[in-house]
Length: 273
Image (cartoon, rainbow, N blue to C red; front, side, top):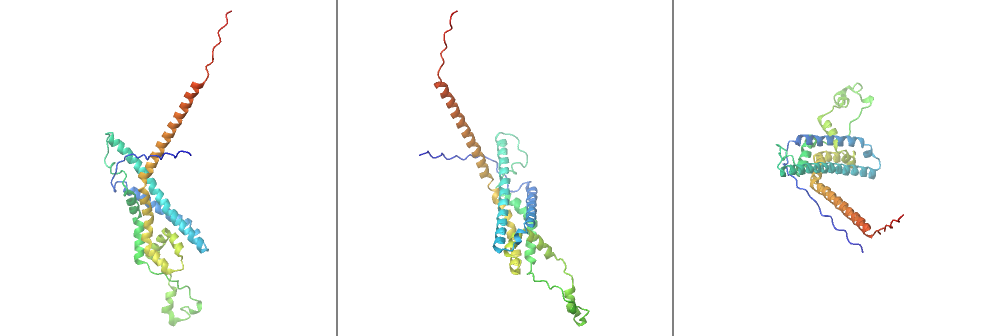
């Protein structure tokens, strides 16, 4: 029976712990806001898939897009957290060796709340729009359409005041603009509830601030995985070094054994002329 493989011992490196808020907050928040802009663009590009006629297939596509969005923001946060932990390890080495630490460098080191703060601040513009819409949103009703010519105001002058309502051109309101922005950001959810139920859409718009928090929360949770991911990196490096040394020792032992067991050739005595 083969011997069980010895479990690999985890290898960790110390790092400096910074503060939740630092000078990099505005730039990282802007980057996250750019990520939300890419999310809106992705929803537009995938909108054709969200409008499939088959109900179950349409629901499956929308759910996959939602899950994919969560995973992408989680991985983005994990990548940022890992990079910051690596930088914090370098700062720890600098401080431990007595080298100069400049102002703000220690505060810029890894903190588990940094990622969530970056994401929340970056989400503030879209959250403000969603909250505004949630407060003023009203149930949408079917448009009144166009009247036939035989009931026009010229044909029925006594009904002019009432019929002029139908001849008034629809204007773009603030609510409409807010609705377009929010729906582009939550388009997969709109595809799930469908456009037939005005009540469901109204409920969705009122819940939109919570739905738009999902990318920020995913990013923040992913960011906290930075130390664990760095531990995996250090453990993998240590395991590779251990395996390489083991192979070198085995090769050296094999060479030593071959030298011992190799026969020694006897020299023939030289003939005298």
